[in-house]
Length: 114
Ligand code: 5GP
Ligand code: ZN
Image 1 (cartoon, rainbow, N blue to C red):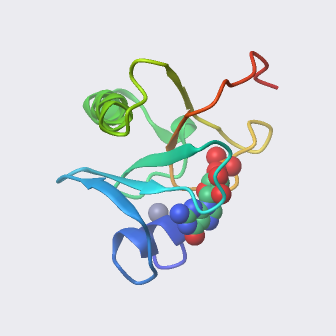
Image 2: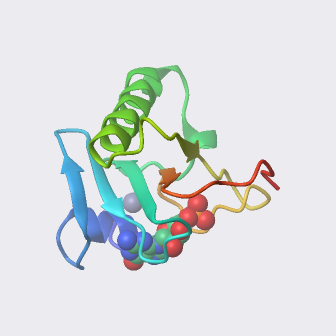
């Protein structure tokens, strides 16, 4: 997707701070971190949102959660804990329409999700 900011980062057209890459997924650091560690786990394939996924994306979604857990471990978050969050659509607070899982950690996160 030529006009998708995350597709442009994945394609190397604009810079990104890459933490992990494999054939299906990439992890970058969030440009505006909300915690000492704030990573974005996303598929290389352009999928706009979680709401666009179905049974055909089950393996990919499982892989993205697995990658989130692995990068949390490699970033030293496993022992103290971390949060994985997906914003979905307008009222879900999603600003970038390329599906991504936030991985947040390195400070005590509040219990509130809203
Ligand atoms: P959303 O609200 O869509 O769930 O979150 C989008 C996230 O992408 C935000 O946390 C925002 O800081 C991050 N973001 C937006 N533009 C860029 C960018 O160009 N590079 C990086 N690394 N993160 C970005
Ligand atoms: Zn995209």
